[in-house]
Length: 153
Image 1 (cartoon, rainbow, N blue to C red):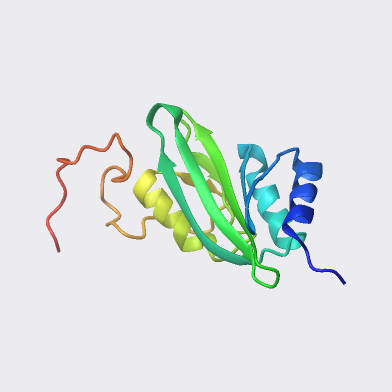
Image 2 (cartoon, rainbow, N blue to C red):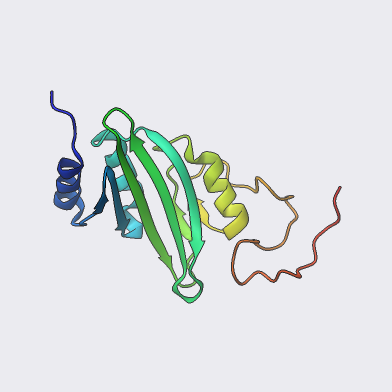
């Protein structure tokens, strides 16, 4: 059995998803359509054997909307995938990767807490860092830094 190469993984991604990943060493970086986010996560885990869920976060691009970014890896062959998807202006819903990667659980909760992204299919989407009665999402660029907050408890 031959080890999966970066070039072979890139070719499989292009064939199945029609996306050409950018390659830097053993890392492939790609932006996926929102509707194929979870499907690609399953492909990355099952076909490319990227079983290590490294991290997930979000970026607020102001008028362009939010972007979800995650990194998964095949530690056996040293392949890393940097996956991105854009939610678009005014959108805040993304498919959850928790059904594919259990490790996405707390990181999706953090993105919900800090950015207000609702991950459809998440088993327990609630705040993880701030109190349940907190108003707003502090990492959104529209969040006012002088927003009043409850005193420490």
